[in-house]
Amino acid sequence: LGFALPLASAIGHAADIVDCAISGVIALCVQVLVYYAARIPLPDLSNRIAAGELGAALWLGFISVTAGVISSASMSY
Image 1 (tube, rainbow, N blue to C red):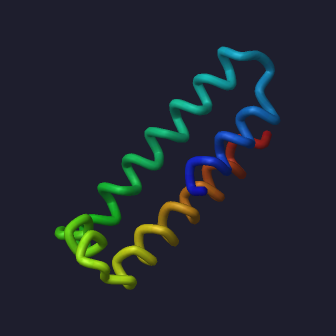
Image 2: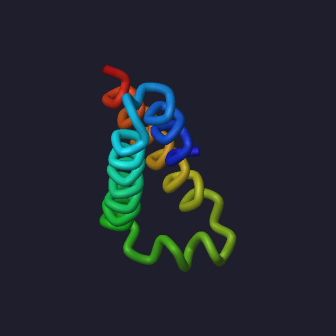
Image 3: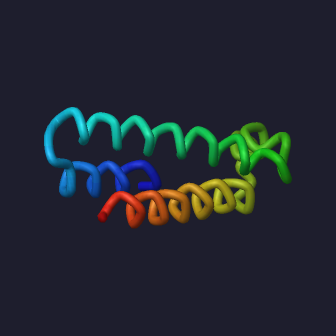
């Protein structure tokens, strides 16, 4: 969902396919950076999610959706 929101915004607001692709790549890069930023306070984030810790999964989910909403809003100019 954190990647789908900016991708939908890119599709809706792009002037052409190249603009859409560039916006999609930027949205993907933002999500990857957010994942690594989310690991700063929880270095073992992936292991905690794999172990079934709901708090770690919610942390990553909320930060991903938040970044997606902000990225989506910044693409709708």
